[in-house]
Image 1 (cartoon, rainbow, N blue to C red):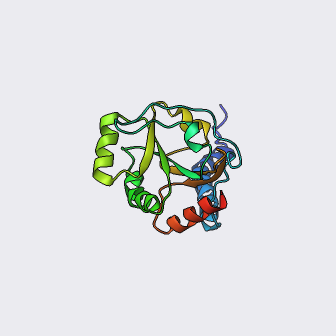
Image 2: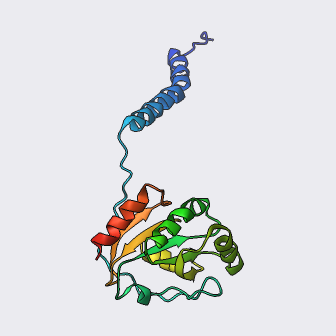
Length: 187
């Protein structure tokens, strides 16, 4: 009987399989590190800028205020359309800025996303009500139709019902003059 021979290749192969996960990890860590060093573009170009608002008519989100519809944005002056929700923490943070915009004479129409009337009422009682009207978008249909991906988002709508500017995220104090400028540009 011939002596047993061990294949030298099998040891080499097993060592390769030991190092392969480490090599893959190092590769992905390198790619991630490279991506973190690159400048990021925080501006998201909306495809709805320059497009008319779609037709919509939402029932009131809370008693005492009318619902929201496209008719609110046709004729007169530019207005803000604010997409928000009572369960949204950044919406709480932007409440004082919306009231500052209202104090400057800006008409704000709100759309409450997937919200209950009692929650909307509690939110307005606690954080203020800058809205001329608030529509209830129970299934986010209007939100998606205008190109909004989350809450809060604010749109500048001109007097012809055309979207002129989209502000993604909560409005900060530094954003108030910029939004006033965008409303002036939309005249």
